[in-house]
Image 1 (spheres, rainbow, N blue to C red):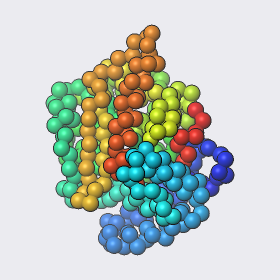
Image 2: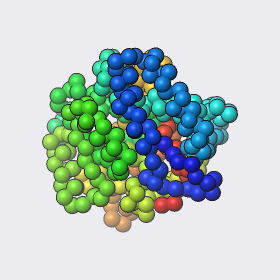
Image 3: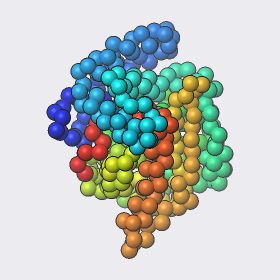
Image 4: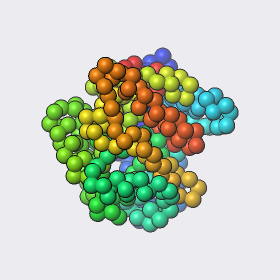
Length: 315
């Protein structure tokens, strides 16, 4: 989550620690699996309350996002009241433990609604891989776990920082990610590009969360309107897709009252980046992604989990 910071500061997301939640994940996983959801819910409440009371930066960032979303949606999403940020943090904590719970309880996959499954199945049957663009919205872990039930589906999760790596190491320690491979891409070297190209040629999927600018790529981003205000988004995922010359899809998984809903849409059959209009072409693809992200945030307002000053971060 976030550490307490002054109102005037806007740190990069990679400078904000998440150790508090990760440290207790093993215990929560054990409670989730062996005692039950009721005990987990009981334990969760004081943890979330602590963050709500003592982590002012996360609280302010949450309120800023909810207020921005409320204005952008024309009032169709609730105006953030005094406890809105608490409910936002509670939704994040539930999603975080669900990342483990979906592996602890495979029966959760029975409540997944995936109306456009045929898009990824057709791509899989073609024998060539693709890039899947997600975000820190909802619970993409559900999509990861689908690889468990489909031996032909191989997901390569691209990670940038110690935060994502820390959580994925936890999955590895618990022997929960046998169907996955983590690929460190803090720097896109020629060797990394060749490795990813080989994955696509083998029919594997590359999963990238495209709503955060990596710490070593702060200058390689573009500011696009997001919920009515310009915000920085990374160029890297779209440049990579152009290099790989493969189809690109957006994939989001949000929690609903009846389970989980997976939304998959094709962003592009191939990302074309002509040399003379490279920046403009990039912006077109990125704007399409951001528009989809806006629609998902509007439909699931409490499930966008970037608890830092998203619009004010300095590239």
